[in-house]
Amino acid sequence: MSDPVRPGDNEPRSPTRAERPSLWLTVLSLIAFVVLMSLGVWQVERRTWKLALIDRVEQRIHAPAQPIPPRASWPAITAASDEYRHVGVSGRFLHDRETLVQAVTEEGPGYWVLTPLLRSDGTTVLINRGLVPSERRDPSTRQDGNPDGPVAVSGLLRITEPKGGFLRDNVPQHNRWYSRDVAAIAEARDLQNVAPFFIDADAGSQSAGAPIGGLTVVRFPNNHLIYALTWFALAFMLAGRLFVTFRGGLFRRKKALNGFVHEPAGGPDASARRTGSDAGTIVEPT
Image (cartoon, rainbow, N blue to C red):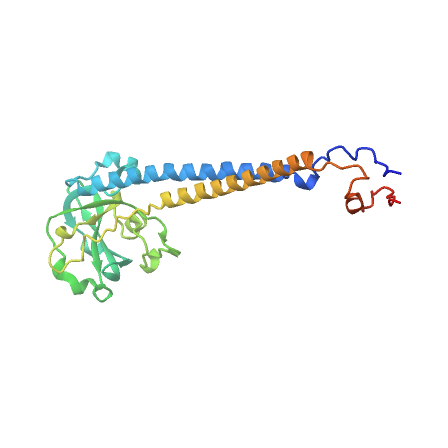
């Protein structure tokens, strides 16, 4: 007697569902790959923009001082086109209307001294004359550094800092200032025809006993290359994982199609191999 052969016993089995990569997981992985690559490209573009910005600012800072923009062009002034321009201006300080703004600098904590400069054409420009320590907050302690006559000031054009500093709002009614908000200072000091920017005075514009000028920090964080490499690395890691998954799935399918061929029940290993629930009748030899 021979072992009955079930229909399809000699046909190769198709791979099970567990051997196939999940369709939804594959789609989501491909979407994630595209997103990661897009983020990397975006960071490369941001780096190019940042390097161009740094180059423009360096050129502005080291250029010879030029007159401030005319009043007619004030509404068009922006950070991108004008901030950190090296400019010069002349006029007379209104020391009785100065404003102290809290500051933390390389010289230590203290106050920026913002003093209105009245020009001959009737316009006013706020000048950040520099830093004074807390013990010199009272104007009476620095009278020698406050010139009364006409002065010429050179420095860097800066854009107004509205509302307040980090997590701290200006409180004009209590004379507490945490940012150099030109419009708010002008209103609090009853100033007219004020430029919508202020000027950080150079160190050379100051006289003996005056606030410490020339403390402007020009620093642009530029970590875009690191960010780009991170996004690209994540994208390639995901792509590698997808490759391994699909390659493993193809290998398992090929093995399923080519490797599982059943011998007849009378073969030498039939009793060892056909012991499952689908085993046929095994007849011992006499």
